[in-house]
Length: 281
Image (tube, rainbow, N blue to C red; front, side):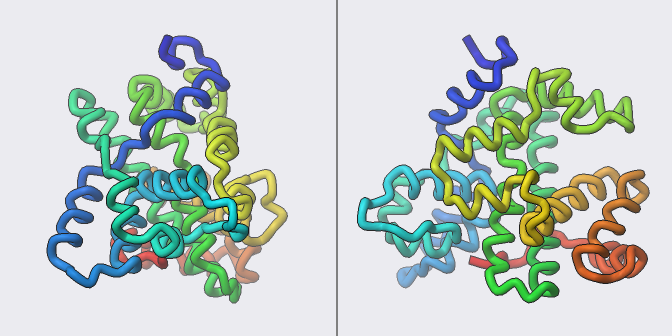
């Protein structure tokens, strides 16, 4: 029985824990082009492509954790380090850009559009977080970037494997602007998506640092709060810059950066991150 028919958190965690993570079709195309054009391909070049796709990023980190040699003690959070650890040829051989989300959602264009919007949102969140980390003199800003990029990974996976349910969640929120994401998810799925995210991250044994940075319950930590506020701003601004939640976001961002809410608004509104620049490795 498909987990969507049971509305069971544990069933979904078991299903997605073993499922092959789908990736964007552009990821496979760009990786293939990179390999054909550049004989001296570097881990940095490959990492730039991987980081354009939150799903491929998760696929790589999951593979590395599941095949970690016993002698490896340090946790690997960064994509470039992961590729260096594996080697470029083993990466191409073992972390295949298949299946694609486009093939999975070929007959559900609305669900594909919803997924691509979440990908764009993830890149915006990562861009916000890394810029704020720099202002806070966080020397490990690249870790904050990856955590923000993967913060809503479970939502992306559900768009692939439970598209009708996720479209219903979205539709309910569009009809009722006061309906919070957690409540909308519980109505349709039977559980909040962040709970599924937590279970998946633990099943995949993702690096402990990454688990902490993605866990909103640790928001008293400034780095975690950076990630959370970046994700919130990206989510709310995706609804339009007149979204009712944005004034609270500006206040919270101001508190994080030690500036006024008005200055925080000026900081984020004029130059909205596009997610199209080169991410950190």
